[in-house]
Length: 501
Image 1 (spheres, helix red, strand yellow):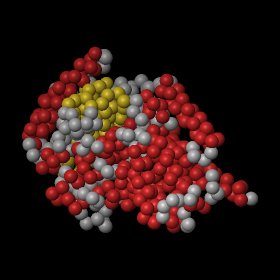
Image 2 (cartoon, rainbow, N blue to C red):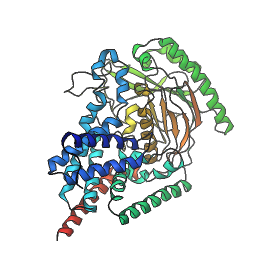
Image 3 (cartoon, one colour):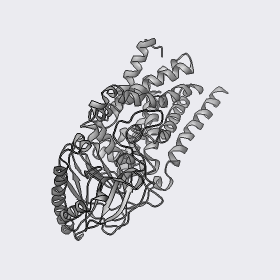
């Protein structure tokens, strides 16, 4: 392909192609645009005068891709615009600058092998390995893996995400990249991609029709969504009114969940949940507040999100497990902090949220009476494939979050999509309770059981579905997608070598 542009015009075209490609992510799911955008990048890399030029083309494309995919970060700055007005034009583009090299490397290195399918395999394999490497970027930022573009809402998406039980979202990323590029190679390759897509979806439909949940009975849940604006959380404005709102919603939710449990013959086992940062204070130091919560809960167990401090002056973003009388049964401290938000890398002189947070010790499993075996998480931690459970898989996963930072944007939708994928990967129900939404429950196959939309104050009540048997991905983790990516790289090298003989 001879490029019609050079210089700044080509750079602009690559940036725009990358930005348009980001429409493939939730909630738009325009997967054909990703295929077209990747084709443009791939052809530009092939036509580049040198490897360094190809890397530059990949960098421009990646900058547009990640800027558009992370545009919603600007909403976080708007919550404290009086302090960080200068960061408004920098949030998404700045993060994109850090992420852009992850598309520059495959664009440059794919030229090392012969054109055609070997080059496509090398491109996809290197990209996939780089995508998996994002978990090591600062505290990790594996947001928007291309595999998430298959998480269409409804039945079609349920079919398409089932292979994640074996290969995880990282393996799906490899499959998406291969499909998006091989479809343009020739008519034969296009027919092959179409055939694989049909088999892929058919396998997902077959799996959903033959699932056998474990004989486990989990509690009914009452997920409280207070819909408190971030400005009120930060400023603690009307803290008493917010606390009363949560108490009222808890009373309503526990009664509704208990009625559902009794109607299904599950007794009166109910668990209420408050989202991240929902308690306007330090819950472990406020015994009166815990007794008030217990009274509103009418004998139910609960999980409440709150900050906490220790004797050394350190603060944590925590989830508290509460007994029916308000006694603290357990505490989980968030162990993966948000880069540039909950902590600042050493080379960054400012933070974009107040306070200094300390990471916890890692995944835990609570096994309290009335909870079932649950793995608690806080917000950001649910985006990490293979890192949401500890040594032993729980019966279900609970993620409490506060997505008010990101407004009514793609951010909360993309966050929810990651929770859905963790359900398929681990084979356990995943519950996400969000302050402003979207609060939702997925079964162990990633099917949505119930949801409460963004920007609504209310309670989502449901009976938790039973977990599925442990998945292949749950046993082996990311070793499988790593092996698949390395296999693609090896096949590319072998295919190129044979062509040159």
